Structure formats: C-alpha cells, structure tokens
Length: 166
Image 1 (spheres, rainbow, N blue to C red):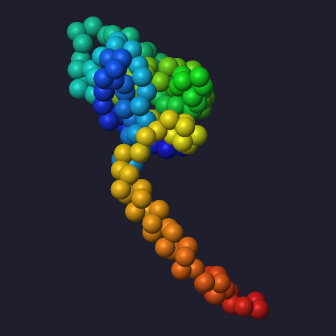
Image 2 (image 1 turned 30 degrees about the horizontal axis):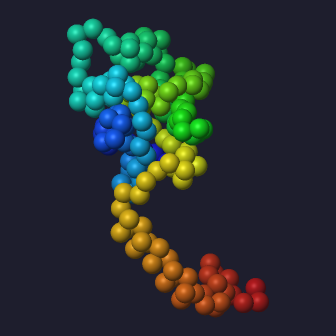
Image 3 (image 1 turned 120 degrees about the vertical axis):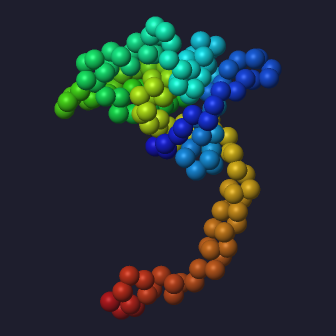
C-alpha cells in the first residue's frame, strides 16, 4: 500500500465533472478519482477547515465516531473495477477492528475531517495513477540501468563478511 494525500479538487475540462486528486507523499504519482459535485463540496469544505452552522453528513459521521469512541485508523482505496474505485474505512473501538465499505469520496471526506491517513493499494496505483514527475522517473531508470550495467560477478562474492569458499 502507498500512503496518499489529497492534493486538491480539479474539474475535467470536457465533462465538467469534479475530480479529487490524490498524490503520494513523494509527489511522484497522482491518482485522479471522478466524484460528484456534492462530494467535491464536502472535500473542499474539509480541506479549507470550514465549520458549517449545523453538521453536514460527513460531519455527522465524524460526530458519531467520536461519541462512540470509534477511531478511524485509515482509509484504504483497495480496488478498481469497471472504472469504479472501492474503499474501506478501517475503524477500531477498543480491541475491536472493522472494515466498512465506503465510496472513496466519502471515505476521503471523513479522513480529512479526522486527520486519518489515506492508503491506496499498489495494484490500483499501477492501474489508474498518472506520473507527476516524469523527469525524476527517467532519472531513476537511467541510474538503475547504469548500476546494472556496471555490476560484476565479484561484487556478489565479498558482501556481508562472506568470502569465496565459505
């Protein structure tokens, strides 16, 4: 799993649909997830730390968790099926731990309100993310190719205090 953070909300220029953009902590990969207008407003509200005069749905959920001493340990975006992302809220109450199915937009909104981490399965990142820093990616590929091209068999014989014949 890869920890991600909310980079912001964007709008698809063609469909005018809102997109929540997650980025990994190294700013190397971005994961765009299309969401609805109401979910975008809820996420923006959490990002801007706005407090409504009365609790909205996600605020109500956070109040419920707090009132019952339930902790949101993390959010996991665990799969992508037929262009739909799936997420879970990983919660605990004392020694009891549960995973609750949730839409990613709702899970993200609640995570932002509780300060909980957002994790994405590597398979989802591989299938749906976009590179943010292609120059850095290419630099790493070049460095790795150079490293591999300079390896000699004897480099493996004297590592870790072992010598040939031991």
